[in-house]
Length: 291
Image 1: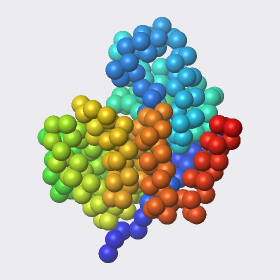
Image 2: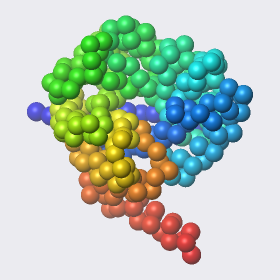
Image 3: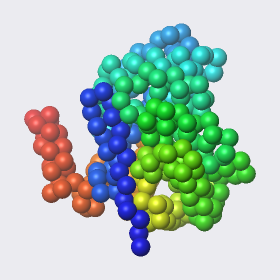
C-alpha cells in the first residue's frame, strides 16, 4: 500500500507556499548563489549586494515560488553575509526562502533573522550532520532538504538511497520530533554526461521514496544536464519525467522560460492545475503583454 502523500508548508511573513504531490510543482529559484560567479563574489566581498536585487526580480518574474539563498563566498563572514542577504531578499519579495549553507553557524544566523517558516538546504545521512542541523530545524520550526548519502559515498544503487532516506526520516521524526511532512528528500540527480543510466536510477529512487514514505522531493535540476550541449532542452524533457516519478519541486533557474513552461504544461496533464486555469491565465497575461 502506497504511503500517504504529505504536504510541506513554507511561509514568508505574508505568503504561504505548500509543496505536495497533488499540487502544482514548486519552482525554487537557484540564482542567488555566488558559486561559479567570480564578479558576484567580488561584489559581495566589497559589500555590494545590488546583484541580489536583480536576481530576485528576474526569478520572481520567471515564476519562482521560493528563492534559494546561498552566500558561500570565501574570505567573508558567511553567517553575517547570509543574514544580511535574507533580510534584503525579504524586503524585496514576499516569497518564502530556502536557506542554503553547509556552515551550521550560517544556517542559524539565517534562521534567526528569517520572518516566516523557512526551508533549510541541506543535511545528509551522516550522523554528525544530523546531530548538528536537525536541532536547528526543530528549534526554528523549519523544513529540511535531506540527501541520502553518507560518509562513504554518493550511492549509485536505488536500494542504498532508499535505505538512507529511511534512516533520515526515522532519526528526524523519532529522535528530534520533526514531522515527516517537513522532510524534503533530494533523490540525488546526477549528470548524464558521464553515464546516461544515472537518470534511470534517480527516477526509480523517486518512485520508491514517493510510494514508501510519501514525503516531498526536490533536487538541483541543472545537475542532470551538466556537461551536455543544449541543456535547456534536456531540462525541459527531464523535469516533466521526474514529476511523473514523484518529484514535487526543484532548485532551478526560473529565468529559463523553456524549462518553466515545460513544468507548467506537465502540471496541466498531471491534473495539478485544475481545469488548466493557471496555464490559461499565464497565456492571457502573455497575450496582453504582447498587445
